[in-house]
Image (cartoon, rainbow, N blue to C red; front, side, top):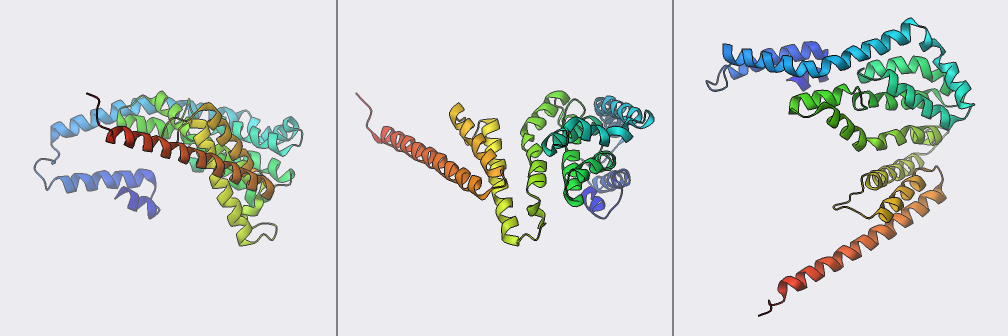
Length: 288
């Protein structure tokens, strides 16, 4: 019910209210799940306790938003980005990531995007980034507002639902989503992915596939896990592959794919040998 109402365009508050009413009506037909005064009291108590975990984050987000708008610093951010970055696109994107991290704390994705787009998009456009690409970069960074600690409402809400530790959940979600910070650089240096500059569909598809492989390699190298814990040298190789696959050159893509196939072939051969040794050990008769 909640998902259906959100898809239909209702606000989260209205959809949540109707879903609660719908839940009460549906559960009233079953004697075991029917709400009574005791269950209503317990539900309100649990909701209040879980809200306590989120309220400080909302308060901090309000302070940040108020300071940035009332002091006028928000209007100067675009010029600050250009001056601090020295007109270098890479550093400008890094600064926008920091701004998105600070201003997006505690804000929903839409609110964070609208705020950061007003502040940072002029700087990207002045550096030669197409308008569509500039807004995609900002939109992508604004998605981090829900899982970047210390204020990450999505992670805190998930922790409240699962009775987990809010900070540990936030840091874990941040670590698992580190690869998301690479995507905006792909947008900036490979705008062909949006079929820009008279690019063909196959060129955009190639860049999309290599970027996906690069993201997978980055996550494997960063986490150090691929069906099992991998060695440090393998982690370094996967990270190198991710860099090569992300570079907007066909030569680097080819080298990255060759290295990736080589290391995956080595791992496959090694695992195959291990499985053969295990099967031989299991089939051999025990010593008496």
